Length: 356
Image 1 (cartoon, helix red, strand yellow):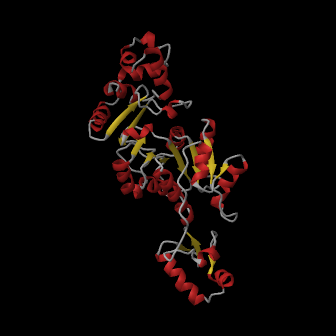
Image 2 (cartoon, rainbow, N blue to C red):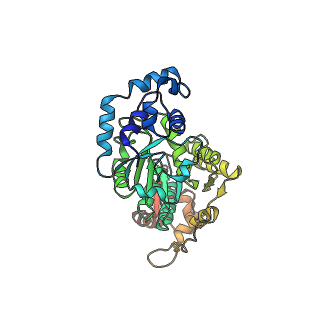
Image 3 (cartoon, helix red, strand yellow):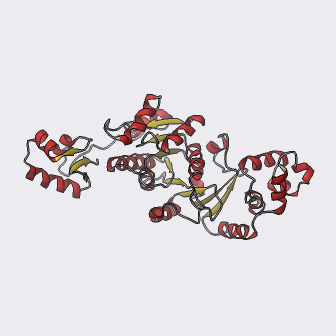
């Protein structure tokens, strides 16, 4: 492992970004040597303003706080020169010089799949993300995502249920949780998975941080699965970055009536792999075969007929009555039972949607 003090003294200097750090590492071999270099030597690689900032050094309190944070159990500083720096991430055009990590560091050596999508996901979208993530995690594949609401959170929940667990790449310092509603989830990931950030402690959420975070999500992964996305979704940025990094892009199709399917459909039209099962992902990435899926059955062992009538697009009581031949009263009773079992959810406007 590298000298944390020297790495932080270099990385925490304002204006010395990843590009400048990599130039210094290439020229001097280590942060210690770069910090000891003369102004004339530094001038070949940095601007005059950057040299002044480097010689002034980082904020002393931030440096002290960062060293104290790293000394705690389960906290890590992963540098570009460490042997366990993720090989996939090292290959991208602009890899972070260092990463703050909290949790199971050894996960960085696992096969990873990014699962991303809308923050304002539908119940079906969240169910799909969680189910796909759980199935792949049970096969030992780590699920990477960005700890956002909606699809990201569902993917992390699914990942936590399997041996592969999950990696959350965040756009803040690791001493903060954003969004606050995912605080409990973040703590569970820190215990059973891994939290990662390139941002120093104390860094708050800002719009520009999330595209930077997205390049790490895709960079860690062999492929990116988009579950739900509108045409202007940030998930499409992750997909674009994945293509630039040479990663496979995959998408789950949805209803032609849903705006949250249009981003996925656009990706598929542009050549993304259409995904209907976890096995499709395994075949696309040439991973080991998945175990056969279990059938979608009711407690009685037969597929619930009402679920077949409902299909996978939202439907009203009147539509279901016409399809099933049941009265509205009988339908309401059956739907309530299915809702309590977590198999159906009620949407605004009196419509129902199948979850599994």
